[in-house]
Length: 152
Image (cartoon, rainbow, N blue to C red):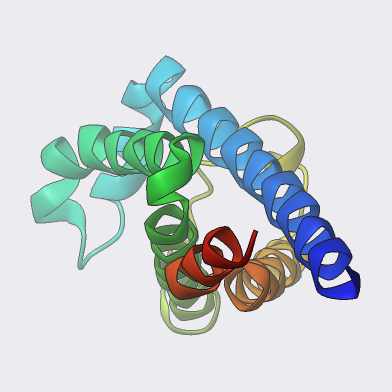
């Protein structure tokens, strides 16, 4: 019985974190799509991204929405959490590079996030990276779920 309770708490936590990730990526993707011309203009001003700006302006929100779909589908949630983590690491790397090495620091973030400074945005991303790692650690593996089903 204690294992069952622990397993239930893990599921509640990972589901809650998945909902938080869904909200964040949906919000970010839609804000970029709504202001895609601003997003594209800002990407064009980043030297190593300028050539790919016409593609990235659609790909970045599209990939975020794909991750949302993975997070919504229970059997694919683990892949969604891993994808969320990888993208957050990439975005944080981009922020660090832009802050410390780029002559131009565009911010294509919308809403509340656009009011953050660059360092605050990096800390915000690091917080969500930590949550994603926690979700990965707590997400029940398929073998654990199969063992539970076989014992009940």
